[in-house]
Length: 340
Image (tube, helix red, strand yellow):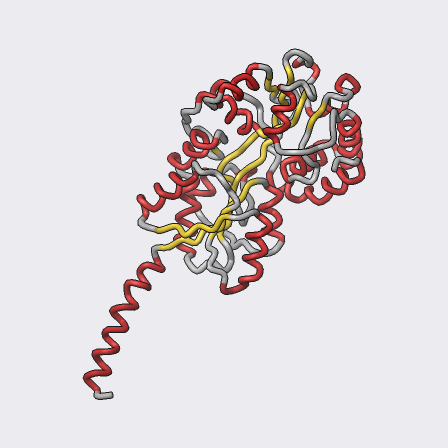
């Protein structure tokens, strides 16, 4: 090939490569186990503000973690987000996260809602839902009450293997020790109205139907029903009351939705910008107004009538890494107690 043709070809290749390189710098690869349609606006706003396009892969937590492991050092994933401290801890144990040094994140996210490697961006409370016709609210003031003799045959719950319940028991282990936590689990199992099945919304509807008197549920499931325009959902809500448990002791158990940057992230600058964006007032309001969660950042004003109607409460400030640390023991206790 003649010299001038080689030069022209090199210039053409460089010209074609430049836009591709620029596009790569303006991209964030997000692996997400949050399956909420309302998050679409969250991602769109980030792109509008920063010009960084989000390539999103959604799947169940275990599938995403397995994918990241299999991809190894060549994984395109920049950020992994999911719900529940136990699931974030699982990713952490696999050595997937990279420490993030960010003044905005450290200043805005309370210390008990983050670790060195991942951050909470929203919170949800594990509340007690009771049937107003069959249960007195004073009989379900605490998680401990669920194991008491007054609630024999009255308790509904999802599986003990589910991370929401694992984190709840993990908090009780931290507060009361392993033996008392196991005694509690056995007491709750003895009070089951039926074998655990379904999700939190199924438990709420079972209480409304009189199948059981009280159930454990994440707060946002009930808030969804409160905001629903469906007549059948409104009828469910009318039959039920909500208790913030343990208000005289440690406070209601709080879990999180959160995420972190991966060690192999090819777009680290974009990853940090995205994590910082999730801690912004705008994003924090979205978690509350769009998906009925509470902001992780204190003092952010929200506009969610359901959350406002649920009122104020005392939250347990147990560090979320502690929940993660106790999750394996919690599963062993549930197994021994027969909470399947």
